[in-house]
Length: 65
Image (cartoon, rainbow, N blue to C red; front, side):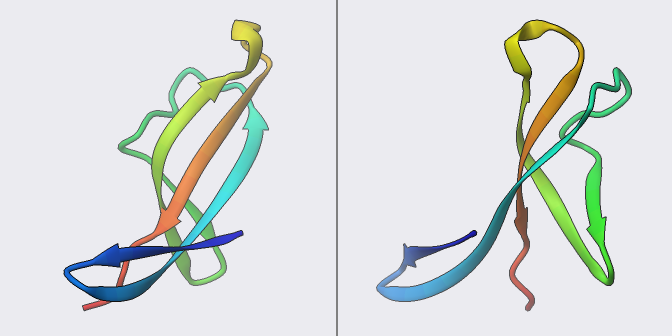
């Protein structure tokens, strides 16, 4: 899924996604999600229902430049 952000009067395309993985206690916002050659930053994390089974990660592809 993608979204658009208004920044300093210009329209910037921001690629965002939601990724669900099995729970790991060593994953935090300093980690990254790699898909092919793209490296997504983790924006937020949700331990679904606090059951330590799955993590839902909100990620974004940083702008180049």
